[in-house]
Length: 105
Image (cartoon, rainbow, N blue to C red; front, side, top):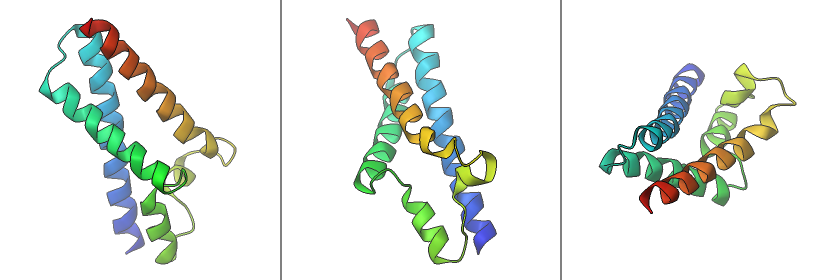
């Protein structure tokens, strides 16, 4: 069960990172479209879930409940870097929103 939850968590993180990359690609290539806004909505939805859960991914709580003591980023990052993940994603998402606004004007 722990392996399955880690795989699902990994897929979600990869998907959201792809979404953020796609938003930047769209901004810099000038191809802002439905998919750009869909990717942005997915990122913002995740941001709202993190905000509601006080900065922690809800899947991490589920993983702890089934006996996994490490969240996704705990597997690939040093402990000192983990608290910087959410603010970094928030910064890059905010920057993407500003860039979209600037391009649309």
